[in-house]
Length: 182
Image (cartoon, rainbow, N blue to C red):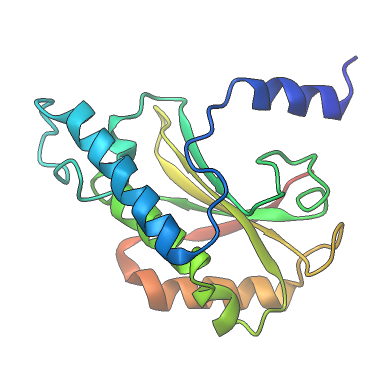
């Protein structure tokens, strides 16, 4: 049987880094604009059946089923086995593809700008955001941890994050569910 670290390593080996060494919100916005432009060109000419136009979101509408786009803090791997994620969990938001791009981009900007953690008094950390295309329904996951390495997020803080998300992204999304990683 393979160790968890080997499984995580194999999983990460199939990933491509899109954004690296983002050091400021301004730098992130520049990188996002470039990525959106690339995805807009890639999606140009594809009939999106009433979905948002390419460039109006991050471009997840152009991903195939079973593909993900990960946005994680510097130094945190997008795997459960990472020390920051090992005791944490994720909030899952299932949503319609027509708003997937816009909500995912909004969550990236809210996280990078520290809005969610600021509104919840920094009682935990958002370690990453994952946008996932799935044949049975698209989703966004917000990965959470405690304030210290290997610490679980506090239940009250998780509720505060859910409340903040409701205020920031409104009622366009359905229920938000929390689940521990391991």
